[in-house]
Amino acid sequence: MNLSGLRQRVSLAPYTTLKIGGPARLLTEVSTATQLKNAIRWAKKKNVSILVIGSGSNLLVSDRGFSGLIIRNKVAGIKTSGQNLIVKGGTLLQDLVDFTNRFGWGGLEKMTGIPGTVAGAICGNAGAYGQTISDHLIRVKVFDGLDEKIFSRAHCPSSYRESVFKKKKGLIILEAEFSLKHAVPQDLQVVSQEIRALREEKYPADLRCPGSFFKNLQAGDLPPQVLKKIPKDKVKHGKIPAGYLLEEVGAKGKSLGGVKIASYHGNLFFNDGGGTAEDFLALAENYRQKVKERFGVLLEPEVQLVGFESKPMGLLPFKKKCLP
Ligand SMILES: Cc1cc2nc3c(=O)[nH]c(=O)nc-3n(C[C@H](O)[C@H](O)[C@H](O)COP(=O)(O)OP(=O)(O)OC[C@H]3O[C@@H](n4cnc5c(N)ncnc54)[C@H](O)[C@@H]3O)c2cc1C
Picture 1 (tube, rainbow, N blue to C red):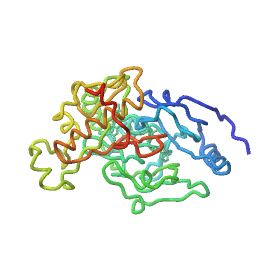
Picture 2 (picture 1 turned 180 degrees about the vertical axis):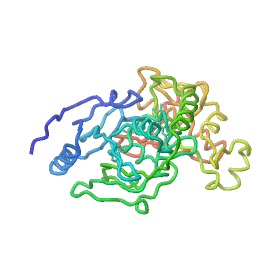
Picture 3 (picture 1 turned 90 degrees about the vertical axis):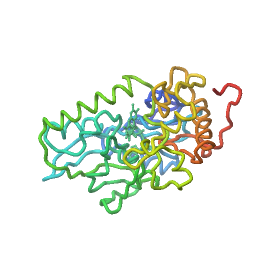
């Protein structure tokens, strides 16, 4: 079986919002579910490892790249089914938010401005301003390399930035069904506009970043000796922003090579031009250790790390000489 559209040694940097990353040994882009499944079957037959990506807005790809097949999923479409919406995984989340706002389906309007696809959002249980993609998810159709399977809501538990699809590799999201409540389109649009304005302050257009690098901490998970070091007014919706902890250890405005931390937000690491994955990790790891020393907690990356031989956070040697 040949795979049409297969390309070799393709730089992954343009396929990520960070614009960092070495080449994929193989890459293909798919626009139909049949193409997506064929690419997975082909890789299985050839014993090639695969990674399905959407818009690459939550990825840090190693400078060495990825030694298998990257499948870029562009299988998109939204249709109504009774009171529900069925959405293909490669649909842009923004297209879904715009659609729901226009036709008066409430529940996703605060997720406006999050880049990426619906499948990427389900994988990382993306969310913002108190809404997450899993809130109204009732069913997910996946392909496991052999068969299509339906995961009902009960079978795809999600928590803060986590999902069963992130934990169990090999479940490729084909489409998802959402049950949303009816709302007034104009009200939804007003909420989205307000959120867009807030987001534009944090994420200027074309900022080369993967969103927040580290996850926020759930206050309920932390032992009292850690909590007592954190002022109560810093706890927002039960979470302690990683940005606050990073700011307290002096991360804001620091840089290493072409990678910088925003001067206005300690958890916003971006590629200022010429940044490498190695610089990115070294800078992130340096401030993660400082947070650990000061507060006694180890921050966990929210960003998905691709193409690293071993679990890099914590194992990569710091570039001590040039660290800020
Ligand atoms: C400027 C900016 C702002 C952001 N703001 C937010 C925010 O407010 N909230 C938030 O939660 N996130 C935010 N993010 C992070 C990111 O946009 C989300 O995580 C997004 O949902 C990722 O979607 P994607 O299509 O880009 O996924 P990718 O980055 O391409 O992939 C992410 C993960 O999903 C997996 N995946 C993708 N498609 C499939 C599939 N079909 N089946 C199985 N697995 C799949 C990939 O293998 C990978 O593990 C932001 C990012 C940027 C750049």
